[in-house]
Image (tube, rainbow, N blue to C red; front, side, top):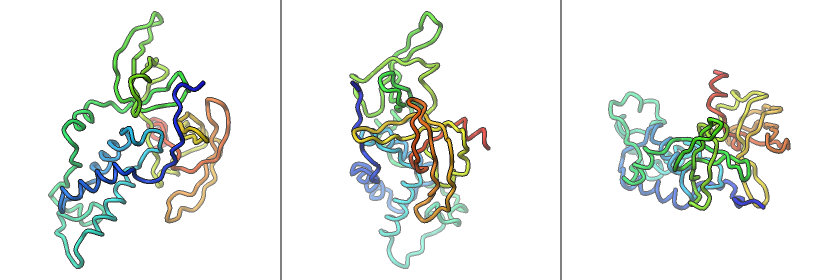
Length: 253
């Protein structure tokens, strides 16, 4: 019996809490705009929240698109902002000497953000990878290996478990942007968001075949045939369900 089930929660945009956070930032920031680092930081905060557990990771560009859309909606007609106050999407904004503000994150969450390391761990209960919230303790095994007790993002203390640092802990996998699809090669190790009727989890997989297609307004339309490592099953998926291993893409550059 699966001890750590996750109900299937297909990606359906932002949660109510995430929209409320972004609207609050808009209200408080007045005419200030985020830079790329700010969008990425806010996306990381959202992805680590319990409300997004079991859902595909948000891309920072999706946060950027939301802000650009709502900033345009809230801007007075025929108003010309100085270059220092324009959206980072405007090429002229890069000439500004005024750095855009970062997201205003409450002090408690800010401390957690600084203390969290971006790691993921593979659960011995289902073989899937989960984001690590906290490393609680460590111990040395007679074999010389080290185990750490981890708490997963979106789960309570009852789901804490000991995992081997050599075989089951690694740097967090990163969602692929639409423009990065050409970097994915046959044979690459990826992490795929596997959706089933009652649950959704992230598993290791390898790229078996790639059907390159022209991109459209929705982004990458390529199809990737992947083979899951844990059960050797195959599935065709879109790019948005894939995350890459940092060292994999680095090898292609």
